[in-house]
Length: 361
Image (cartoon, rainbow, N blue to C red; front, side, top):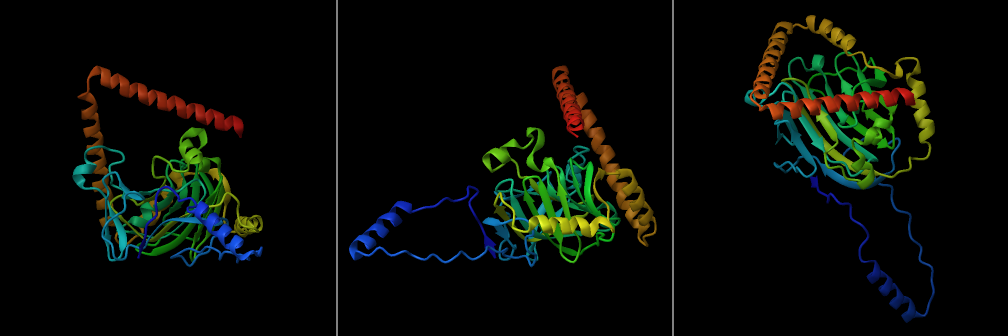
């Protein structure tokens, strides 16, 4: 089953004809009767068994369960970094790029399969099933969420957390919910303004509030101003040498106003985690998580096989770095100067943004 919608949300049509027809009926009958319009039925998700907690569904923008089609609609969803995506067994599956592509550069080379999806605006409700597969995937992790905003969910063998500010701040985490290899997860992600709530069926409900959800510093101003960003901001990202599968994927635009009772539900989510789990925001300790994952990996019965895969990935990255360095050395002095200037400008911009954040906080 496949449902496709235009990237531009449709407006009302046929209004003048309807008014004319109504005038003819009223004048012809000579009666002035008041029509009773039944209340519209509440809108519901097409595929998910989960129900929105915060958003009021507005318009269905995209829905696909990959049944009966073998083509990826790149107007809505698009593979990234040469990672290889195809429809197989009625779901979408993503594999890393070829080794040849990975050797071309050391970063963003497709070693992690990634898929981006278009959103209809800043207030959305996104429902899907996702699966992360491959030997050692639980120690590497998988994620989904908003790309340029740096807000999303990360799962691994240690914990599941919702993270913001370009992977620097954890807003809420669950130590009891850990990534399981080859398991399907049914998820529902909702965003209104600077709030995000994510439900994982038979797992945690995680909440966060951060201004990076609304394109701070103008990085995604076009999303807030025009509704449709020039890039596709929602993403699924796997891990090195592993695969990602997606199914029952649907995207809705949401109203600017939240559901009645959302404030109470939000308080319930935070209160429910106060005793068991750490409720942020707090600085993400990447090294600590990495050490915990390495400790678990050492106890895995397949540790030697996993180690060989990790060693191969490291070797390819080193070769990619060498290729990148050789490519840079082959440039003219003018091209080198331009590249260095761009890097310097980007570093200055990041420093200014960080300074601004610190002053605001």
